[in-house]
Length: 396
Ligand code: C5P
Image 1 (cartoon, rainbow, N blue to C red):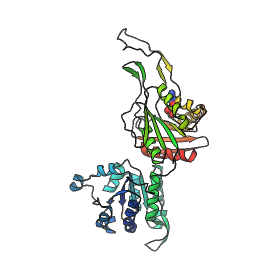
Image 2 (cartoon, helix red, strand yellow):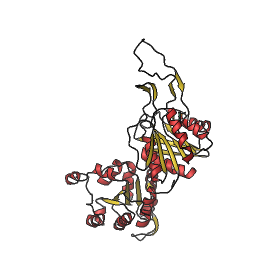
Image 3 (spheres, rainbow, N blue to C red):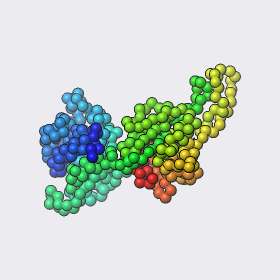
Image 4 (cartoon, rainbow, N blue to C red):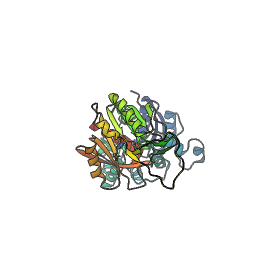
């Protein structure tokens, strides 16, 4: 297995005695195919020198937030963008507290805020500090944001205590990082995702559409690829490039989207309807551009096909997931929609809050299935997508 092949792992090292194990962790990540760059906090440098990690990683170690030389090379925003995974090991109690409150008072915490990549941490601290309610609350905050936590292991500690708080073994941490990318959760499963808006033509140059950016659907496609799925996007017009290893069918209207999805059904195990399909289309599509005329005109609209309901009613029915954007009684309406359209799962989105949802980079949702539900706290669409894919893999 070298599932970290071609993956960029940004390793954050904070100031605990377990920092000496980070040297071995660099090696374990590289053995699995990763490119590794390292950020050290000031505390970490009291335990292990940057030179050690530079020699092992093959790159200069990053230590300063405000460093004009560093910013000339690879600055903190570039580092944040470079990473496919930010892995912090060891993560001390202080670092976990700073992450949970969103502090950005050094390079590592700033990059943690600035990166769209998933965050995985391997806590390491005295067992009493680990058990403290403050740490517990901070860890729960991070968990609710989709942060992956590896360990800690229990056993004899450097301070002489015995209990939970030892950093997990480097090989165990590297395995967890590998699983994140090739979880195999959906290995070999064929996933079809609809994304973006549809355009319903009025005449050769005009159409009815909506503001859907397609970001959520494309993030789901990336998460499905990462989970090992054979992934297909059926996409309305958006200005996004598709993730690698994804087959894309570009469509315009709801009818085209439906036909393309039906064609794909014989090779589909999981169908995720994320597109913002127009509910109505003009009854007549004029062959020529409509001329300006009277002060008032009336458009006659007719309903478009309900794609996800058609898929769910099909004889080759895949595991079918829909979305429900609601402004009030979100969960009740979503559950009703799931039953009406005969879906296996629905992702309920409260769009009363303008700051999240339709066209933003973040989302906050509740995922409902027939006998359960799971709220997912506000996070980037890529984090939410990974969590949705994780739940689909569990339930499908
Ligand atoms: O009925 P409503 O539009 O609220 O349902 C939203 C869900 O149904 C989403 O999953 C959306 O992709 C899907 N849908 C569809 N075809 C339509 C309308 C909605 O697949 N014509």
